[in-house]
Length: 119
Image (cartoon, rainbow, N blue to C red; front, top):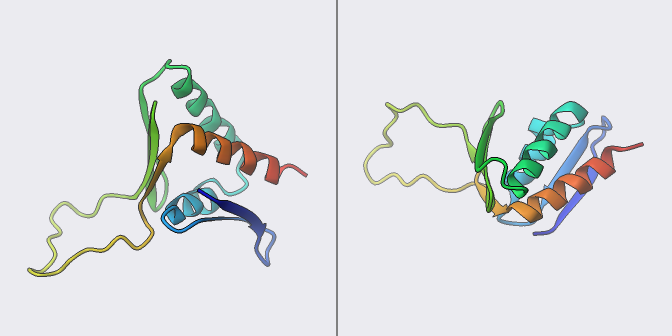
């Protein structure tokens, strides 16, 4: 899993993750952004998971949710309306809105994000 952190034209932090992990970049860019408190809270949750003090957690953002357990992290879109049913023969595709990775890799990416945000 490769990633790069940059700033957009408005000096907002942007995380770009390699193919297959784009949803993680979206979570970092859109849900975390430069919110130090949210980042600190997420790092605390990851530490608790790594230490085995909790077994799983779920965080909900404005567009996606983050499911964490002691082994891995998943980013997925918020649930669709439960009454939604696609037309027959319609296939819903993964458009970069879902990704998963190991918890240690996610932790390292978060620490790198934190370092990137520091002046």
